Length: 219
Image 1 (cartoon, one colour):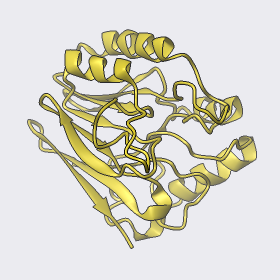
Image 2: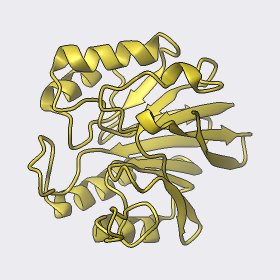
Image 3: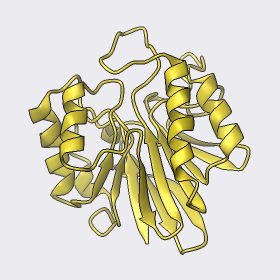
Image 4: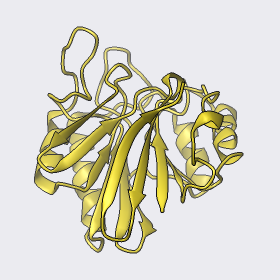
């Protein structure tokens, strides 16, 4: 079985139809930023574009998503933020969306300490699963997935510490568009597929025992 994950859609859904195996994935995982400060109608249009190909969606808000976006996700029972979702026997995904403060004053920013508290609280609800995937919109600090154009690392120290302590089987992240990459923190692969408009996505496979994840791209 497999899942397809991506994020940083920012209302640009043209690449969806080009993603192989999207239609027959067990579910689509969206790691944040469905919209550009969008309202309910904008959020729904993005969801509808994904659902036209695969209607099973787990999604969380990024820093560019408003409360209205999260409301739409909750009402359709596809929200991932601060939740643990079973994907298969012994496999679950938990999510923490939004971001720590940015220079741009985007709609869904919280103190870094709040993100870290959310991570640990949500992780405490995931102990029944042998394999855990974590979707965190904010990337961990000092990795290949948190560098902006001047090579400055802008990710979260607290997120990195959480990953070091808990060592989930996979971390999906985003937020920093120019840091499309794969890195590792301990034994945990950390993948940022970049903006969907640039074609990046992640394919996750599970054979009942082992998880594999690939960073892929469509042109």
